[in-house]
Length: 224
Ligand code: DC
Image (cartoon, rainbow, N blue to C red; front, side):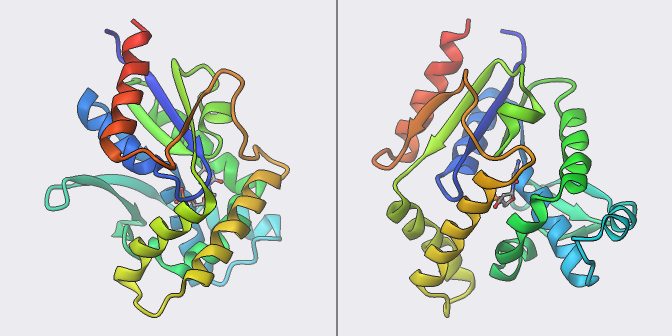
């Protein structure tokens, strides 16, 4: 089968990246975490105190940002580098999570990220997850998946993930952050999170990792 583009969009913390990584591995495709790009840009803006409400400051900052996904043989995955620094762990911090949706809503920033994402898909053979991948980045992708899960289940999953890094974090903080991000991501003016008309919905509230992978692989097989 010729290589295709697979897009996975959906709400925060509903397992998009887990499924995307597994699918990419099974198919021998490249996995790209588009959220990591917005998080790395956010880290740059916070570190350098850039005013993201000012177009000139934003353009200027973007011209100094270089993003690259580089394979790490220890973790066995592609990790994001911001101006040659591996920031894969730093960008998962709550400080970044608290601001990323606001920064990802800025038109100039989306234009910058989308252009790079489209280049990465030129050769196909890619699984990319995010919020607007099936609607804006690859509207002609062969397979589009939209993922959802019950909010309480998503909060628990993200809490477990973040608690390992930051034992002081509370369930309430995680829930507030997820609800806040979902609200901004789905209500922003530029490419808001929404299900593409031709996307297939997977609700994984009660699915384990193998079950969701089996469903997705079946969707790929159905394309042949
Ligand atoms: O997938 P994630 O939680 O790491 O994404 C972080 C934020 O980036 C998310 O709250 C919204 C934004 N994002 C986006 O606007 N568009 C994408 N394609 C991916 C992420």
